[in-house]
Length: 156
Ligand code: 4NP
Image (tube, rainbow, N blue to C red):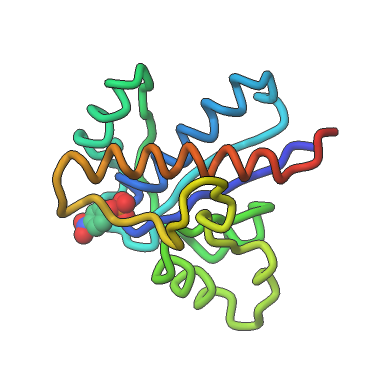
């Protein structure tokens, strides 16, 4: 059975597309491409249709990765559609949960940093208003978190 994963941040141009692309990279590397569907969304709609932020794409490029995607806004239907929804920070988490007033899908919504194996961060810091270092930090942190996430799934 294919598992559907949705990564969520605020704008869907920095953190969550990075998580989506990194997860796809790890899944492909392990030959598990047919087992997972990864997507990302933002709780805000300002950047709908946009590519990942050019600074994030540049940081990825330095590691030989091409970050692709087109921003979209998170919608209540996503709670039904996806098996696991991974919030980058607590605000994202609150905004996702707010679209599920009956709490039917609470168990599907997790903080991505809960899967970190090395980093102790509780949230993925928003790099949008900072310097280039922030983008590199987010990529390193998300490699750790996505690696842990992949290990958390049953092998067969
Ligand atoms: P993201 O970063 O949530 O990681 O995509 C942001 C992108 C855009 C804005 C804020 C955060 N913004 O305010 O436009």
